[in-house]
Length: 279
Image (cartoon, rainbow, N blue to C red; front, side, top):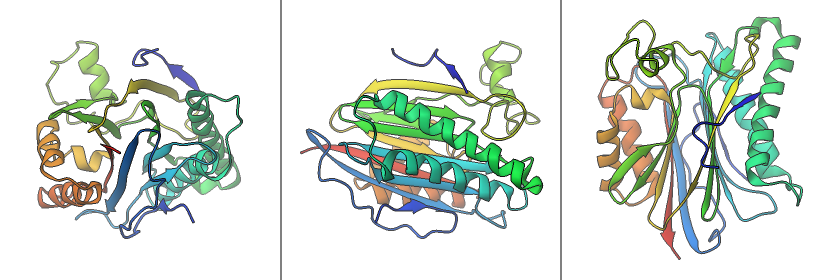
């Protein structure tokens, strides 16, 4: 897996398709703050199944919190299988087994994504019907006050701070690449290419490029990870307003998913939120 360095500044429940939202027991604090974290997922109004998966879990053996969202690709049941495998492997690497004492959290997160990629390749080799499956993956690892992001695909990570929402990841779509290279306007939509990924986890024959980012968090910050089923219906300013209007992370997730469904629900919708409050 090739790292992309430009954006880099320098009982545990796993959410699976169709799972009803429920509380997540987290450590009471991560250093000097208390975290409220939750997630919600829905298949939307037009899809027959939910191919999104997500997890919210404390790290094993260290103070820390893991958030991950995957949006499966491949049709039939392939996307559902791919997203479940990726989430399960990342959780297994970071939240079920203690990390080696000498491994940095940035390296641990990268290793977990690499293991997820390997698991997808191995599954495709043993199950030819899944040869074209794959998944996006957006993961956040928090060890207060540090935040590491690992990202492949067009799910997204956002940071809400002081009433302002900042997108922390880039969409790895052909349309976004055209905009970045100046071949179309920076705000111009390219309908044919908006949902076509040039970068995803899975046996595509090309090595996935891992986008990484590091931030320092502050008390009051809110993190949002989501699939594109949310952002195709709600623009960034609307996301920011709805995050600001509610205090609890579960309430924010439920409202975001409901709003995307009210706006059409044309895809699976997943939102994961973590809120840092002063202890």
